[in-house]
Length: 377
Image (cartoon, rainbow, N blue to C red; front, side, top):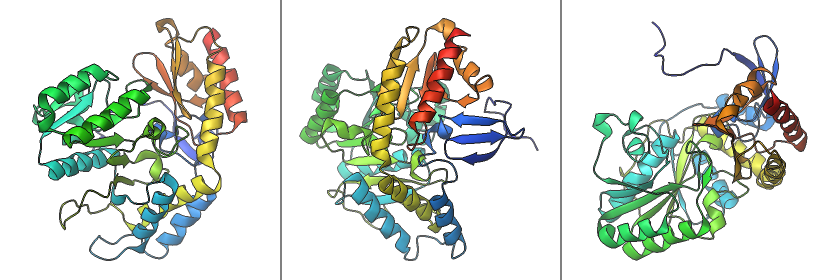
């Protein structure tokens, strides 16, 4: 049997990882500024993380949600403390797409409506509802197509107001990333996020803050939406939540009252997933990594803006997009194969930086030096 060939692969096999570095099968060291799509939040193979998982595996690795799992309660309490949402409720699942799927479903249960507002450039996942609110027709199969999704221009308050005025009583939810990842590190303005909150309040729609990539401390706030000074109804999270272990969740405002069977999952919130997620929050809190993301991110952004060849630098904290002119489209590969630095991309010519939140200034300088040389190659 062959693998189903859906991934364009770099000819690199990673065999070891520690902190912000990985090594290939030839023992070549790389600086990892991508963290496997913003997944590695506290660094590869962090000792506390490894210890937490190993100790838990030696006790019990899995049982279903038909029994009490105290680790889930501990995780909910710790997440409430670190995120500042102590009165919210936590539902645990396995992936970002599943988190968004459940958030949209919960919103529809809440107000009995079908219409969802999403935005140009959005990426919310590949499952049925999540891909329907993703702005990429190529990955929307015919079975996923629905007339219930309204795509509006990103950051366009007038279009948002007009749509609510015309269809407000049919709108179940508004879903948006505080900073679009796949869309090219494009940030929602404060006034746009505040407008979403106001209109959702006026029409009893649900504000879903997709924080799968832009959340969990990456931007210098726990959720990237926080900087607007308003609270969403549901926050979705995944990627950095487990530092590589599959775990995701939705943080749900107290106005939502659950009923047995409303949502469900087999693997979500299992013992190992909770141990991984607790380890991540403990390290984030103990090592003040949200502040570090802000400080090192500010430094990187300021330094990157000094390069004349760069069209634009976007983002906050350690979620950074570097837009290059088309003649410099080779720079990402140059960074990887010549300077041994992993970065991400957004089409057509945006380099994405999504490193671990404990990235050091020394690592930032290592990248900046290599980036300068790559621009001249």
